[in-house]
Image (tube, rainbow, N blue to C red; front, side):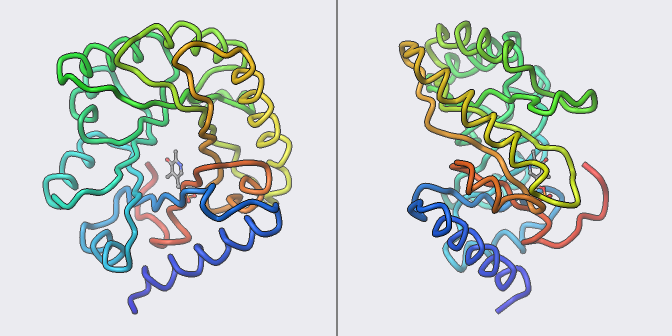
Length: 232
Ligand SMILES: *Cc1c(COP(=O)(O)O)cnc(C)c1O
């Protein structure tokens, strides 16, 4: 077994254990292997053990990887998306996790209509209100969900957050809980066409706590692929 396969199995065990602790079914959580900056060979290694969900944060890399690997996989777009790059991602990604403005939502709508498909998206919330992060406040998220729910080729599936980097993952528990509460609040609004099923939160440093607090998708890069050579 290769190192990346071993790492994945290790992370998978930790995901399963966190689900157990929280009394949740393992099936409720999708483990996304964040392959950004990592070579196609490593992705293939994981495909060999049945992994289907991968995460990328650059449009160009999604194009390159989907051209190199034509087998059907679930490519999750998790990075900041510029409007002029939307055309590369719609039709390739299974889910865009990072919608944080109406202008971006409208661009996705336009492209999805052109390609005659419905694009599932998550609304990215800047839960810790960090200046360095993209994403919007809880109040803005409510407004955006309302507005974006009227775009017919966009399907809102839930929320996404990037919690702050911390030494102790317990420090982020409150943020994850806040995300779940926000999800429940929006769900209770019963907006037509809005499905608040997904909560994409938790990375290498804190995915277990995120699962305990209700994450349905965790995005794990470093613990699977090793450290990245450059910051992205
Ligand atoms: C890179 C990245 C991850 C993975 O981070 P790790 O700490 O390496 O697990 C998760 N989510 C987003 C949005 C990222 O950009």
